[in-house]
Length: 260
Picture (cartoon, rainbow, N blue to C red):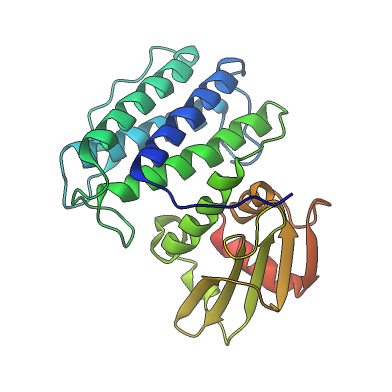
């Protein structure tokens, strides 16, 4: 059964962050703080929680103070928990503060961001998808199969493609996202035509993308939830939940360059 996807408001993002972070905190509260996170090599559950909590506080500081230039993480005043068991609660408290700051600012306040959108709304959207993917990391660590709401997953893929060329984590891999017209087609099988299909074209100057159906050099079909986890490197294309057609090497090249 396919679903219809409609646009997002600023309040939609804020409300979704609240839901996702409550879910994250519940999962983390039952986890071993020292458990290794298989989708984030070298990280424990505590490090995962610390990373997201610091990122949320950093983003909130930027928005609250209407910063127009970047600020290093270490310059944002933060009090860490006394021990590892305190991190789930600490993460939840940070999420509450972040959402309050985002709601107070609205979507159109001018602030610095690393993406093309230099408004507070960038951070509401970014923090939703940052938190959602890391919530999936926590669930995978605990042996839970992550599921991402279809509407969140669709917007998350859009957001990834919107901001990817500016993303700090792939600045040294951008050349891998250029080409001679090769195309990748991603198709969410649980979404109606239009918003659930993406055509990515690799050009000499970089990649472009648009919604729509087409014949790609490589095509991947799967649910919206599975596709966003694939694009963030949390699932492998060899997983039987995906249907693949065409150039496997091209897909591997894209995923290798873009994974967070």
